[in-house]
Length: 278
Image (tube, rainbow, N blue to C red; front, top):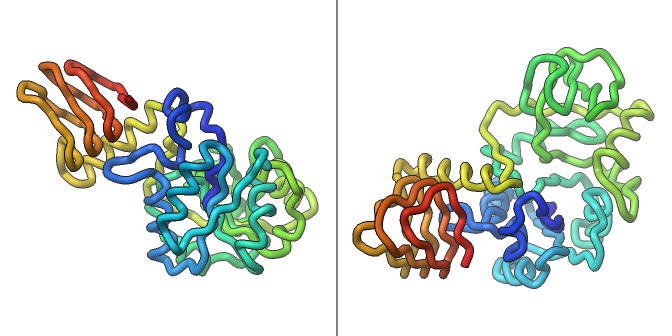
């Protein structure tokens, strides 16, 4: 399941125009990269929940026959959202992936390693650092500020995990996955395990991080800029670390550096460190 219902308040004003999962990274919406990861791993059913800008997410999901939409008339939280989607998800374990997280993660490897009530992807750090603590056997013993055992290493938790069927049965109608499900499970003595992940991942939850993700997209392709189909960049404009969406226009004269111009938007050089959405 891809969690895509949030309001994206940290990414405003971009999310006044689009739901956060639909903001473009390079040539595609952010959520498309998550879908492609899951699809490549052979995940048989992908459910996306939606609340903010639900019509646009509905259009995205409707364009892909392998996706289903779980609409929330009110925000149910990360735990409530997964619970609400149960009829679409079916029974069994569920991979849950926050839509604003881009990670070079193989979901098939995560599922193969899953052997507890929940398995959380963890980027290892020294003990005491990050939002997660792990003991010497790989069990989660710290989550947020709550401790439940002796910690051998810390880590970042990027919001990707496998949720087992037993914990799915305890999901509230409304509430957060960490505070209302995972922390109480640890308090009951339930075993949650860490899946160590040394690959790269990005949270696109702020404008700066969103810009960084687009620059990284260019760097992975070994190019300094990308101009989408039908876009117009006038002579005298120099693109450097810039993504120009389909049908957009870049006018003026001078450098456009570390910028994203959304499809059909109109930008004026010189420009640096900006996202142009209209």
